[in-house]
Image (cartoon, rainbow, N blue to C red; front, side, top):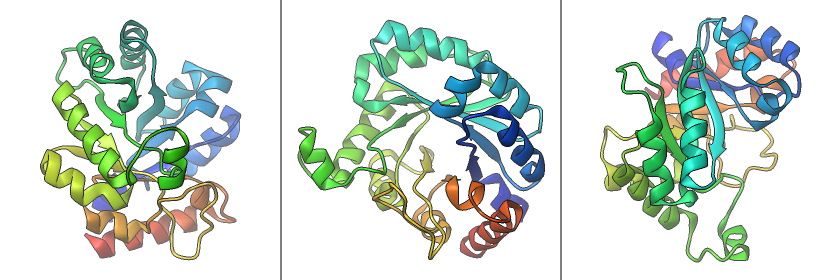
Length: 236
């Protein structure tokens, strides 16, 4: 079960630090990382990272930096200095130069955070992509963006389970893949379009899966976490 726990990232998408910290304390021995996204970081700032890192599991700082290269480089450098950060994100649609600037801004130390690129949000399907002027199915766009991220020197990408096989063929077995949009069977999709169960994502080759509302909104978050861990373990 320890291996299964190491591959589970719980998204603490709260608007205040207190409930996030309360859940983190309950789940600390059952997860590999906690994800801090735009909502909690905007509400509480770096203090959220410092507080939640103190519970033990690493921090996935998912702020999806997407700006001009100089601005993103500065943000990556600042985020790298926060305690406990093991993963952080930029948005691949920011382009090659932006991603290269982000890589150059990382510390040179061996234990630096790993930098990964968000490809296509799991809330978007083909129709949503067409509305913003991006042609083709999400799978093709994700593979292209993953290739760009690898060329830029990033450690991996965020991609739904549906795109994992193609990303693996494009970028190889050592390229890190973090899979969001993970929902246990029977769970509500919410605003997600390209979803998969924990077992499906692990069998597809995800290094980590990200689970949010199926745990944070559960009547018993610990029981929900344990059920997901059992499903991960069955797929390993």
